[in-house]
Length: 482
Ligand SMILES: *Cc1c(COP(=O)(O)O)cnc(C)c1O
Image 1: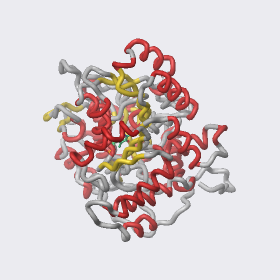
Image 2: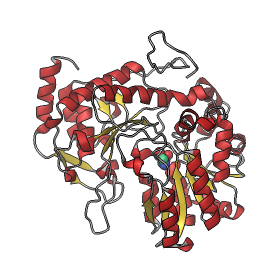
Image 3: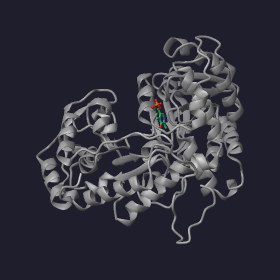
């Protein structure tokens, strides 16, 4: 977003790039969409891409790469050990984050696995602003537990708070006192908090958390997967950082933390992941696990081509025009939703637009998965694939009872540099229709429920014939439209 003003005063997310390669997408008729949803067990993860018009499931591994990233892939040095590509990537990371050691991994959750294996002891607690699905799964798989202490504002759908991902400092101090240093595996801060609406973390909060961790000698782990959106919000929403370069903001963040890890499927618009650390003994402990689970130390499960693309993608993250495109288009979409009275998480975050299924589907019992039902209905209504971020994405309690999520969100992710303003308007239009006909949306129940990360491949069915009624209403209102 360079400084371009429109005569009309309108706020238009003007792209500072042009599109020179495209992919054809299909929009199948609503009757077929209902059938495909049924075949997919009402789980948007199980849809086939050929049946999806707009894939807003995730921003993971589906971001548009730049011509320079593609060009870099051609110079990859294919060798098992000692690849030039690795050293190029390592030096870019050391330069950008100013940290000593880099360990490659095949994606973000692999970093979580390694960090958890080294730091999480059975019976210990990891304290964090908010969990991410795979983070929590790895911590609990190591016998640990989590405590989430995001500020109260973080749980509010409608808010003006600029940094809803911040940690509640009083709660952090209380928890450290209550549990004691030995029962705490680490404190984790997630940039652009994924599950509560892509909401950013402030620099002030980072500094406070860092100081407390350093005093208590607790490792401070930073999940930088959604760093690029968070950087944009620091520049835009924090007066003190408006003139600070992106490079200097990243260096300051890094100086406050002990371990940084990221999913390169998001950060750097490539595929892969990595861990950065300064402490030599931590590095050595984590390093042991890389060849065992990921691959040799100079690729860690990534292809050398992706590593080249990542190195360039990370450098491009320092460009404000590059990192602003997603937050701006998310904001445009969020504003469309608000204009049409569709309940949505505000202020707009990064990552995507989060429709509030708790409210839209308030007539459905919580035990029938409000956000899951809305996600299924969104696909039927528009061929748009989003992701449930609510109770379905939780794990059941140890006694088998349901752990009801505080928020029930249908997350419409916006892959970076992939969709246009007309796409955004289309989604808002179908969401508007759905919201007006929300009483037609009904609940879901499991027919197959996996024990771990059930949202990935669990199968559900509608509790009655509500999806047929939805299709009938669609035909009535839209005639022969797709
Ligand atoms: C996606 C994501 C992860 C996991 O990364 P993968 O590459 O999908 O394994 C971890 N943390 C956050 C915040 C994420 O958004």
